[in-house]
Length: 317
Ligand code: NAP
Picture 1 (cartoon, protein in one colour):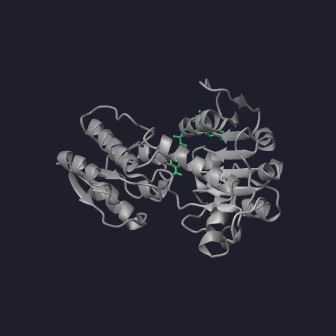
Picture 2 (cartoon, helix red, strand yellow; picture 1 turned 30 degrees about the vertical axis):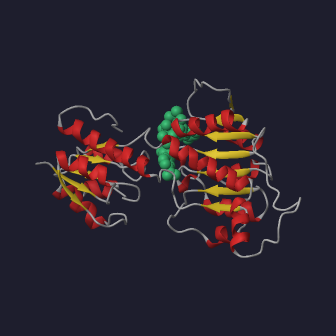
Picture 3 (cartoon, protein in one colour; picture 1 turned 60 degrees about the vertical axis):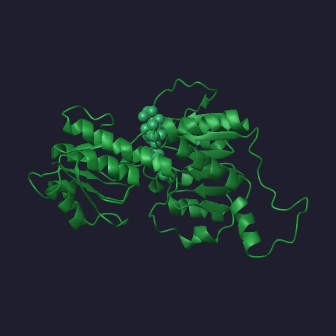
């Protein structure tokens, strides 16, 4: 029977579905794989389900001339932690789980937008600390999202789901910057450059994939272009935003606030960010709902099943 290594405990439903098809070993830990464990993954299993944080670099794939492992069925849509070209060169297929994550991640972006714009984190901290002395007309005045403009950086699946929520749910205008032209089923204004987008919006939301191409896409220049009341929201990958530049921009009052689900060196979160009241910090919970994690897991199993049946997996990357 095909040997599958599940590198993290996954929801019961997913483990049960995998066990019908494969000889499954579950790694009981939740931490990223060590270099040694990645070598074990490739040498002792036919298939592996890795996830965020497992840094399958070119060096790992090149350490041996041939590996037992034939497929890395990544749990998650983002696969910038896997050197896909090096995997291919080593004869290893890579798949991911697009679509299953879209709505939940867009909801997390809306959570961050609302919390940041309406100062919800600050208000909650005030209540918990026992510092709330009662309602008054000028307390904790934030930014009303209705009628404002959201700028989407990366108008893909998640970017579009965020834009739809903003347009249909909140009556916001939508502008965006993406790599390729988009045919959208809602009104949205394409901007010729990232800087032009940054300068013109009240909320800038990052929804591009991670990787070399987008590393530090949001740098000091982009943050400087933003309006001083505007909020930056990142649900993509931490290193798309140059964190030191973001801290500087917030400290200098160049932008109004930030809502972050991901961090450049996560799980490390800079103290400077934790100290600022106008920053909302979530622990990478973009897809953290049981049914979403089940859908993602069942998608990895479907990819594996197709691959070992000799078919092209539905979510080949
Ligand atoms: P997607 O459908 O591939 O969308 C990504 C979009 O970004 C595409 O439209 C792409 O343009 C655009 N893009 C790529 N590079 C760009 C650049 N340099 N400048 C401007 N636009 C660029 O991916 P998705 O499913 O929406 O997911 C996006 C990312 O969200 C994932 O890769 C993952 O890292 C992250 N994510 C985070 C969480 C979380 O828990 N916080 C959960 C799920 C996903 P083209 O259309 O031209 O390709």
